Image 1 (cartoon, rainbow, N blue to C red):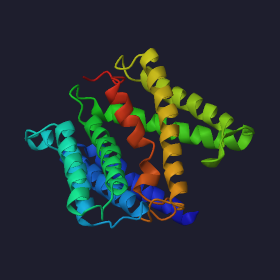
Image 2: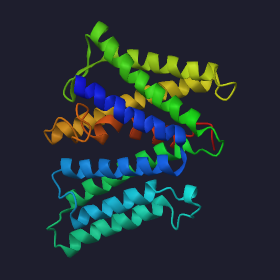
Image 3: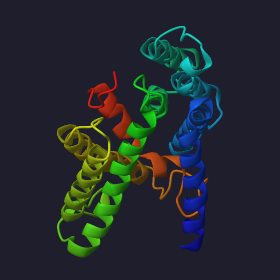
Image 4: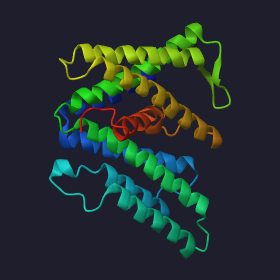
Length: 267
């Protein structure tokens, strides 16, 4: 428990500190987290972490999360275009190797590239939104996610009786999930009340509820594929906490969701 607390304070402090600073430094931190996350994903799927095929995925993740705008650079191709080209390259690998690298392996690498690359890209981009309030939106979403985690944990311990999805995550309960949604919505509403009109109550309810529901789904997704591969944690980078994917599974589901569906009023 002591190790977990110390790791949480150091890692959390470093992340929040660079988030406050923003700019290229924060974006580079998120890029490093994304690359470590993809490394964990590759290792978890029992594939060579630095094999030639995996390198294609690292390229895709790097391209998606790279701080193009902050460095004054134009992205040569859209992320969608690059991901399609890399998908084609993945498929070519199966042909060139005469199925020594089979389709199921490259499919997993492509899935991980999209899942992790876009997840961390939207996390980074939220900090530098065009409206100049990126720090507010980032903290809003993180606070909603963390409130959901806390609400689910304490509600589950106090009131939990009905298992949510025992085959995937036996400790999660319906009562805990509901408690998480309620606390996340409360956190978002507090942000709205202190935003000086930047965030409406209605939008806060939508964002808080989305962060809780999608965040809990992201956590279940992580639990599901860890169970398939028979592992407890995605990595060991953060003693007492596991790996990057263990800590960010909700983040990389929530941030793309609220951007893609235009729930964040920033564009």
